[in-house]
Image 1: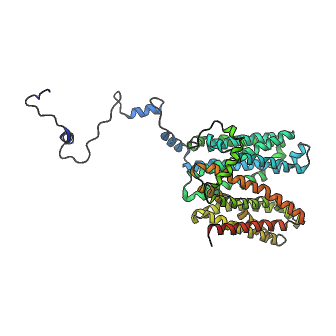
Image 2: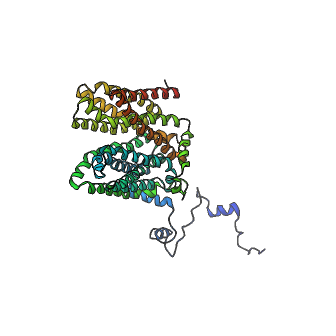
Length: 470
């Protein structure tokens, strides 16, 4: 070992060396080491090089913060904006089928009642996608799945505008496939991003886009057809759908960062019967999900029947003119739009969404009975009852979607929402059918409405008993 030269102190080691680095009289941590300079410039120059393309790529978190600064929205705000836009535009496009039904059947040389087959084809497309679309949502992510749905919707509208019946029915199937992803994809995004204390309100705001889009279609589609003609109007609606598809693209990278497992065989699984069986099994992933699904079926029966038969009931059985019936339907949709937001706010404050759904069953039953009793009464009573039905029979969707998302396992939100909506849509399909059969057998709509009210009350009582609430 080399010796130490005489007259020079021995180099400090261990604690003594650290004490030497931090002289006496100074407290706290040792002074930080000076930042390394690169070619005479401070270390920040390296960051500048990253910004202008040199050096290593920035981390994904930095990119996300930069996108948030550009969009000026929190993550839940981006999710709500994207889903609400898609919900409004999809509802607008879906409303064109019943609104343009007489023109469609005339162009296809079919009887007017054939529009029912077109609507049934749309329903088949929706059920198909709800049953088998889970792998597509996992593979692409919610925003990309919504964009695929908008693409299907646009192509479906174009096919519906063609004067060939076979292509028109193919367009109706594509339209159903395009409408179906809205609820599972939207619920997946909002459940992941929405603050828990405002979750029901945020879900309800998104669901308010359904009647809002339908109301916009009701006041604008007919004037557009009269000005542009049927074909040009349909293509304009398809172009509007494409514009909305492009409008949600800025949100795609932020909101699709968390997705399910990639599966390049999603298209093959879209046609697999096993996906349908899985949709039925996933409802049992939480003890309360079957109960919530049953509530959704009961309310879906009431909602579909009210929307399908109220105008006809008022015109044929109580002598209202079409304009008066149209005003009443506008009140129905307007009250449902407002009530969805109010009920979402109430569910957040009360924090008992399932109990609120049970109470809505009983309230909807009472509102329908009042409507039947007041249909021949003064106008103010009729308008009040119609508004009450809109607030109850059509206002439950946001709270229902939020409750499904809350009860779902974290990785199965989209699957649970799809499965529950599949069963609910079956109720929407079968309910009006039974309603029409009973009305035809009895010669009156009153008994059909009372049957709807009875099944709502029965479901409400059973649900309250199952949950042990008094």
